[in-house]
Length: 454
Image (cartoon, rainbow, N blue to C red):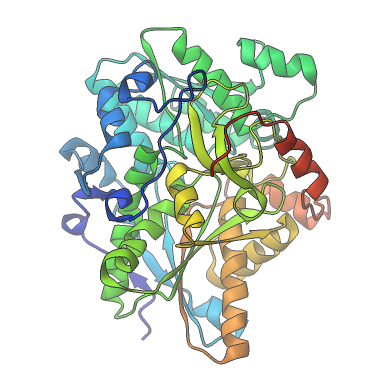
């Protein structure tokens, strides 16, 4: 009988998060103050984040201990299973071996609670009463709502309008866990009003929602802000995924040649890839790590590496990132969690140094890949996860053509049970193949006045 599922015990759950910057020869450039253009210190982040998270944001330590209370909550669903995708291999008629790490077993149905729980925990430790945040497709907002409910913290979520309208059940998940959810852009903030003045029918974007959530947090001393991707401490928390996967691949008697994950701001990709990149950086392995992004929001494959704001209005420090420009508003594709203009600082540096790869896919190709996977393996993937599947299919077909037996691992970051409207639109031929034009990218980048990087 074939072994399809590789499961770790609770005792084998990692006790530390992995900080990849400790292993990098070229460290990421520092964030800058937008006024002085000088590197900012940890004190600049104090109005928005609790001090323990700020320490994690700037730490040079390789291993950061996971608090016992966080590990106890992780144990509700962690360690997550790793599967060998025999049926997908058969459908693709490929010599490649395909594995996937399934994060959809969490209470929120995605990988996002891996950072939501520690963020809520550290806020609770400092007596924070309320946390504001943004969410694209709703996975992050759901995760933070779940975490805040456990720790008795109020949660206020600014959900990108296009997803607020198309994914009502994710909003209801957040409401069930006690969160207040707003369709962004709103009239509740100056940031939202400024966007609506320019475009009353704005579909919203993660950059806009971030601006609104930060504004709300900055205006109340009892409120802090939480981000679901991009920042170093968020990527740090997600490395529990890849650390488990390393152990599970060893359990399977295998090791990936290729690791793939969807890419929005970086938490998903970092979570599974960074522990494998450590093997490259420290042990001389040659594992290819590929970030799969939407063709409608291709910052890694078609953006520029320069300092830019992490939000639309310009309330964050300037971050060294691959970006399409903070004013860029992506097309309203169903993979709402990937509609972000920029990439995390660490991932951007890794790409600049050619230590990782990036690839883009249009949404029709992704839904086709998602449906193929669902028919083969039984799990309906979230639209975000289908981007990784599209890359996996390409690599599996390439292995078939070359005759090489490659081992491919990808992060199935969440299920699509609350995204069925998007599948209905796909089956009804309502979705269009969309790729942002060179003119649109050039127009967005031309508006940047932020510092270039030599």
